[in-house]
Length: 571
Image (cartoon, rainbow, N blue to C red; front, top):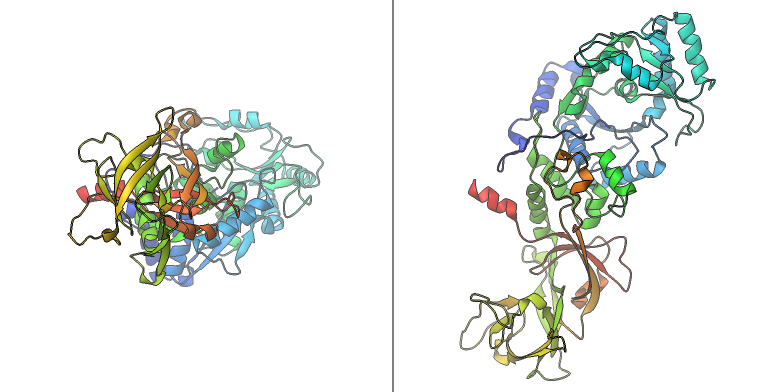
């Protein structure tokens, strides 16, 4: 929750500008360490709510918290703020831990839960009640909102605000014992109903909720509100710097007030800009809507900005960490161009991914003068950026598949691919020339007949002639069938939240599934999670959910087209 986006509308960053110009949090910590504040300790935490999956905005928060702790030789906690059993599940806890480990971070033995502190938080609440700084209120939720006032009008005191300390203690104990129904009473802090900051107008600390908790079972029927549990949990754990997103800036006075009234260890809360990426939403509440209403197949849908979705699509943790590092840390919010994220991914995959050939829309080519039954093997480099990746052998035969779009019967000028009478090079193999076109009864091209030059083996000829077009291909006799899924942006508008109903901007064409694709035989044993560069097509990952032994499914992680590099080159 402390790192979750809401529905605000950030300004757009221009050009290649990112937020890396100033790391103000690091400067604050450097100053405090130099002053020996907290005995020079740096201890941060990441406090997710287990009510959904982590998204890339959370990745930024994790990188900031962990990165600063590591840089200053400090510690880093993972703490689940599990204060709302109605929305929390153990499955979310497990998914969050899995995502953080995949991202490359280790909380060591410092795994905590807010529910670990329920007894202590209750005792803290008793202390404030005894000090006359908290009271039990019988107003309904709607009445509390009405009494709260507005940004321009002060609130008014609840008629129950001046109950005696003894009565408040008695009612609070009876709330804990389960005597009252849900929503009938709350415990509120007694601060100032005329405070300019609405968060200071007697905020609710506890509500009654008869719901089974995923860790404490039915022990409790009152649960602490986030603003009450958050700061005290930080204090109990000895956190020195509570780093959270900018939406919590207005909550900081309340964070400080609770800790100061209790007289306990006081961490420093510092807020930074949330991550906003074009053509997506980074609000857990909004992502839950997409899942529950069937816009996507689940939290791990490869179109989702969740870490599980990005992992399934083929994103690497290294690329995500690089991206988070490049956008930097600042107070001012902006809209980050999604092209920068894709650029970071291409940089990483270019080094890691083996090059393979796959034909997504196959058109059969028969090489008439190639010997029937003959099969040759051509050696191909797996990755020119990585010698250790070695080579593989690619079979070649009389019948092959090429991409349908690589042939035009009546080509325009400067069309350098295959056409009647036009010669092209087959990657790693021979030069071929189209001699004849075969069509079905509907006039659709179903087959090409070509000839090859035996002297052009490997891509050269004795006469030294060159061709401008090079095509990828697969041998028809050796090709394996596969399904390929192409992904587009999740939304049609850069900032989907500019409309009242953000789902109206959902991109119905964000997924295209292509069946009947042909891939080279080396891909037959590809394992879920492996990634490749399909020549001229982009980077692809073997789907970890739908792939079976007989039906590999490849998700296109990102295309080869790099708009960010072009933008950066013009700056």
